[in-house]
Amino acid sequence: MIVIDAHLDLAWNALSWNRDLTQDIQEIRKAESGMVDKGRGANTVSFSEMRKGKIAVCLATVLARASDLGDPRLDFRTQEIAYAMGKGQLAYYRILENRGFLKMLRTRRDLKKHIAEWTAGDPATLPLGFILSMEGADPIVSPGQVAEWWDDGLRVVGLAHYGRSAYAHGTGASGGLTPEGKDLLKAMREAGVILDATHLSDESFWEALELFHGPVLASHNNCRALVPGNRQFTDEQIHELIARDSVIGAAFDNWMLYPNWVRGSTPAAAVSIENVADHIDHICQLAGNARHAGIGSDLDGGFGREQSPYDLDTIADLQTLAAILHKKGYAEPDVEGIMFGNWLRFFEKAWAEN
Image 1 (cartoon, rainbow, N blue to C red):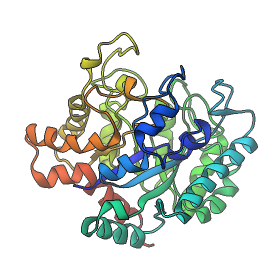
Image 2: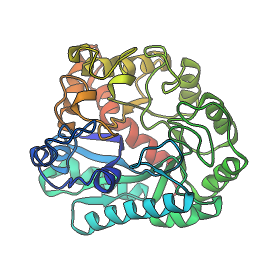
Image 3: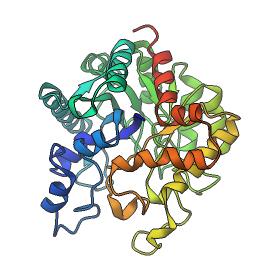
Image 4: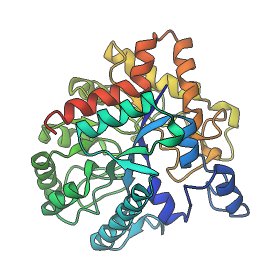
């Protein structure tokens, strides 16, 4: 079964972690052996593993913050620097597209053609499809740049990551949209850019959904009813997204899957892919159907196997989720929807005019 994964930080890993994602996963791990930073030598994502896992399409990010949070791989002093880093990540995607590893999907027609090719063909011979997204909007220096980024292929934008961005408050912060954030939402709507509600603080979430009348998704977000904390959605927020016909991608990050998870302390066996299925099931129970849940793994989001479910070695193991959902009583059409069909339907509707 093919998979659509709504969140991977491919270019950020390549440029900021100096990873060659065209290598075999074991080669990447070997190259990083002896490195002491979190996630080194234990990564779970490479292009070959994505093909093994039939990850036909992903939302691939541009990720650079204009922030003083202090991560040298993420945080830059100004939006202009974040913009330059974002354009560098875009260049990485373009180069790999030219080499046949990737294929940017900009329109409904692109997406339908790509899915048809993957359904009928051999994944080993096909490029990995990606929809360009932005995790935190700081690389958009002003709302007037949205049209430029649209022409570059950007189709999905989240206003903030961690802390405060130029446009909104994100995870770990408290507050609503900035005046520029309100202008950015207007420019996004005019261009056709989809809003990603992931990472927004509660105040920014509600304000953004009130002001933005275009398509909304949540690329990688879990449920606060199962794991407390403002990184997860409340049931009220999930109900609002369901009412907007959104899809919510379940993340595979352990601290979002298990209450009070602590790296190096919580037993590895405490978190499994079953926990991911629990978050998916919670969304489905709130909705009364399986149309609003999907995958947004975030498996390369600054961590590796040490912060992933114990029964996941690489991204290819996303395939095991299907059997777990069947075990929970989900019928085949619903499983197909969660694995890829719900995201496919969402983008076909959002891109109905292109």
